[in-house]
Image (tube, rainbow, N blue to C red):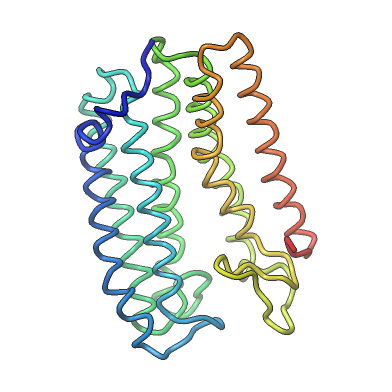
Length: 263
């Protein structure tokens, strides 16, 4: 059965999905000017430093792209090296670059990137939504392809498939729900109290909680499969973990729609 070989990890990270690995490095490097600008630019938007949101997006995309580059080794070799997959990775990379140009550009101009219905930004917003679905679809494609890799340990394979597929499904549901509202808040904050680091509201419902958890299903479930590999109950435990994680996302989703904060 195929398992992860730590000694080969660095080389395979760059070889199996070079577009994702290279773009992860590029996105990380282009975040450095934002780190410099954060203390130097006194502007604020929505109650926080104007460059904080772009920095969060850079970090999230670095993690996402690096994870996909890491998981590419679990795809069947023929699929991983096939022309269709290579072409799709470049489409995803183009969508990532477009998203960052949009978010960074809005910050530079001091305007909202999301939920902006003024002028050209109103037309750009739905286009960026399509691109966001496109880049998230990489996890769906990879999950469905890994499902065909019979050489993998069953528990590990199931955890990868469920983690990647649920990332797409749950993220799209949360994102589309959020897009139907004028903002990510469900309710009107009075004091603006937020949780540190994440910035989630402590007063009203915040759809970003469910969205965040949804996008990290690909990180939450594979470790379970890795720990349960070779065990007779491995697939069952992975399945239960997937149900539990989906329930957690659903609970925060319903909680936000009810207008209640996470804490």
